[in-house]
Image 1 (cartoon, helix red, strand yellow):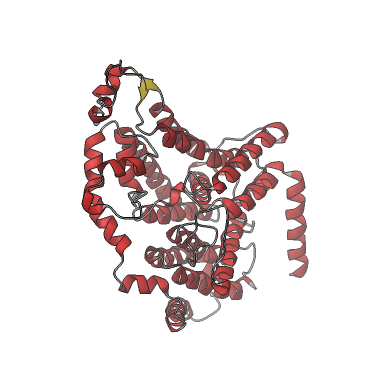
Image 2 (cartoon, one colour):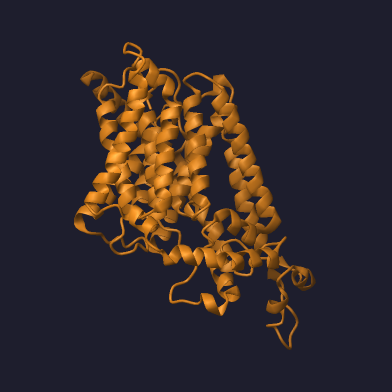
Length: 465
């Protein structure tokens, strides 16, 4: 076994030398871990991450292989449509057409004594331009994956899992040291968030780790061996970090991640236990459930279960989201069907905000990305969202109904996207570079469900995860 592990490490280092795209993606992941956990446009991390993405694109164009788009086209098309929406919103429109758009009357009246200028559909063009610029990160990831060899793509699950574990380590340092200071993100002092500025985004990332642990454990080329005790150590750490983060939605996502992960590898678990009595399999499931309960009890006893404390306590932030929802709905009505412009929610909410909602802090997002897309992008954004969800549903159906080793990675991508969709009902995780990258990779894995069997590029039977 030691020789096999050594051979695997030798192959991994050889891959870094032989596959420039894989090496560039590893470097980009390191930059994301350092500076890619914030969504605000004015943090230093955005410049660092976007600069790294542009540099990766330049190096890949000069020294990389010719891209192979077989199986990647659904993701490329969806990403292209996502980029096209804000670009269209930045095109200057004739005064007559612009004034005919809903919700523009008050802004048109601001120009007095001179002719109305040509203006873009977006009411906050700078924010919409930032929305376009943010897409350089998933674009770079997609191009690098398209340039990778089959062996490089087979290592993508391990690469993403490594990023999750590195984020967990950083959060553990924050817990033990009583906090940290990351100059690249707008983190909250004393909050456990790893590389993320928002605890909900961090909890989602750890929930994705809970999903990947069972897959990583039982998708080895041969018997899981040492991975089983490693998984039994990782799952409690992931759950405890979610509890310490203070994210209430993270508890739901973490539990869902564990359940989905076990469903993904239920066949592998049964095969690993085939020499044992039948009662062992349900006993294992009960043991995992008891382990989760034990983590909660330990966190409560150590006064680290911040998520549970926030569930029991009255939360002013949650109350603000509930009170602001009617205002957000009014904003959708005011600007629909054209929308107000992607990225401009913060400024326009302040414009519509009633006096009874005024406070020292500001309401930066709707905390429901589906609703915010309707407000910002109007009917075109809603149609694009429906198309993306429709493709996910169709591809997921194809992935979950197919059998064999090859379908597991596609199912993993489907489950990851489902958790991100659920998290987007309560927050805005897809606006951070790390989650953008995760969505892109999960979409690539899910797109495997529609590929021809001869074109498989992700782990197949006999390859390790």
